[in-house]
Length: 485
Image (cartoon, rainbow, N blue to C red; front, side):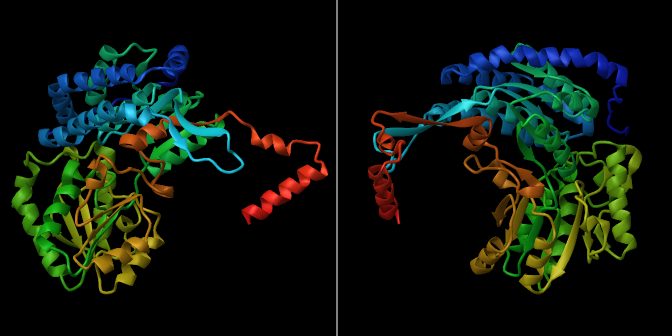
């Protein structure tokens, strides 16, 4: 089985030749963005509907492309790529008029005679930079929200999934003229060209390290950003947890897309009283779902591959380092580098100094850390960067509340994992190292909008305080200050 294809780096002379074309495309969207500032909900909904229908029509091609890029199972393509895009589009279609409605605000004594409201104005020209692990989802869901807010967009997908990028290119080219929405393929050098342009908003999904580069580039043009990053999302399985439910759920969410999910459980803290049972449960579940031996797991139709040889080598290094430091492989551990295959693997008694405990795994390795006191877990979570997600399992609501109150994360689930991403009315985003800003539904519409403050004055009481500051004006100011105290 061959490793997934990877596009070659674009030669610098080609990048230089491409710069004018990228600049022209960016310039062509200016007039469209200005015209769309006054676009009605019906116009925006029609654009979203066209994109949704085009994605649904291309579903067979998307499934084939995902299989070609990293052997992603059809069921996972449907669930994590197609379902999410269609659901985001349908929500925007149903609720856009409500989102666009100006919001009236209450007034104050000083502002009597003035009506205040917030109107949500399109930001303008937007750049969407998306990763390779869920290319369709993480390109088109932000695009839907950008269109809902009345913006134009240029999409830069990852070059590591070229088959999916090609299908996406076809969808965009057939659905929109380039002065409205465009998709540009290429490597990091193409991304640098795009990031040098004065976009009105940048929506980036990727690693924290690249997120810092995007933020630095955006700062040069004072461009606003939404950064959907990652990090090491911890899971806590407390003594009171429903063990069967926890095992089944964690096995699914951790090994979906072969662990290449930003919100996947990164590592699991398990109370020592149930740790042996949890570890044995994970061994049995992996065997039941993915196969009883190395050969069966290699041939499982339900396991994607690591995206390329470089990432396979990186994940293998984490596995080898943990094993060399004394971690025990409970199940899995098989690696076939030439096929970009790493088996679902559970590691028990992982030492704190192992590289796997410091670096984001982004692969099918699940370290298990046993604990006795809740304070140990809280201290270790707070010692790391704030994660994108925190997952808590247990029936003791007071202990769950303690964990939630004494830690910070972009989102959290209680007795579940990853569903915070699928909940239509919750914001999705990180905090500090794991992200900046939120998306999904109305929160994503707001991210792509400028909240413009409008003060509409009929009677200007503030004129009572105009200069010259006579004794009467000063006395009135002091009266107001006493009233406010």
